[in-house]
Image (cartoon, rainbow, N blue to C red):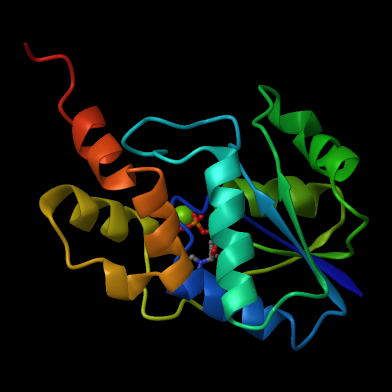
Length: 171
Ligand code: ATP
Ligand code: MG
């Protein structure tokens, strides 16, 4: 059985890593779909699809998860009613979906795909919103993400990018 985990992963954090490991106990293969992959360079979506792909691939590799997973960027589609077909056109076939997102759940349920909401792990800290806020105000955030994510953010000068983006156009 092949499962699909979909998220924006802005950035990939320890909650995501934990849930990937848990899902891999119950599926043969896991497709990790990077949603809104075309978005980047905003306060809400600071990292590109490619940067997020690196974060996920390297984090899983350093945790011994190198087989049984695919990582696929999925750009948004401006039409929710055909979004599921769009996802299917870009991913290996899957039978079960994992997501906590209300819209994602609804769209899959309406076409008869099983959706499970994984239990949230240490959600106060393992949250993209919380981590982005901490990066902006100067941390501590490094302990909330896999080591590889700290390295990717450093490589792309992500902290400076985020602080710059948050300034708006004040002159
Ligand atoms: P944001 O605050 O930006 O929405 P997020 O932490 O919710 O970030 P997403 O990319 O939206 O991250 O997460 C995708 C999916 O990963 C969620 O729908 C949820 O199922 C799962 N997830 C997120 N955080 C956790 C966590 N702490 N523990 C377990 N699963 C999580
Ligand atoms: Mg979320």
